[in-house]
Image 1 (tube, rainbow, N blue to C red):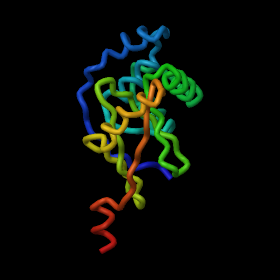
Image 2: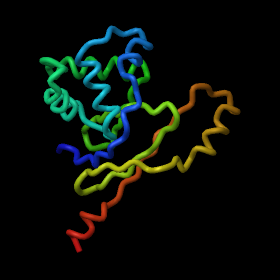
Image 3: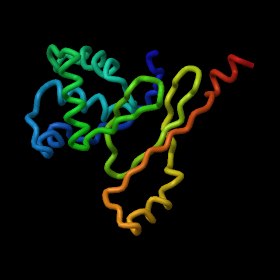
Image 4: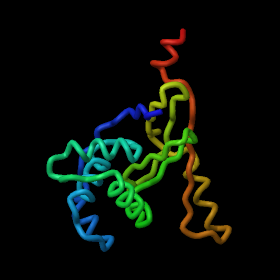
Length: 154
């Protein structure tokens, strides 16, 4: 099932070409297009959704699905993007925010995804390094029924 991600516009303040160079990659049209899409809209998006969006970008040139998969895998390995798995069989990706991270609430019915404005466990994360762990991260997702689906079922 395709996700019905509720896209939030966010200003593209990321210089994606500089970001690509910063991690030691060659700047290519598909890489730039993918990161511009992820920087310009809040996803997260499936690989297929990203492929469709990249295909609409004229400056990206021809780009097959395999190229998208390879770019996303490379970006994930380099820490540029986050992988989101909501347990529905689809993997989604979003640009990793350097200043803060966030979590999501996902509608069980329509699969709409909304970002949560703050991290409810941030203060707990501070305690983990005291246990000797380094490079600590966490994932937390919430599931419910969105207002639109609730209204339709009432």
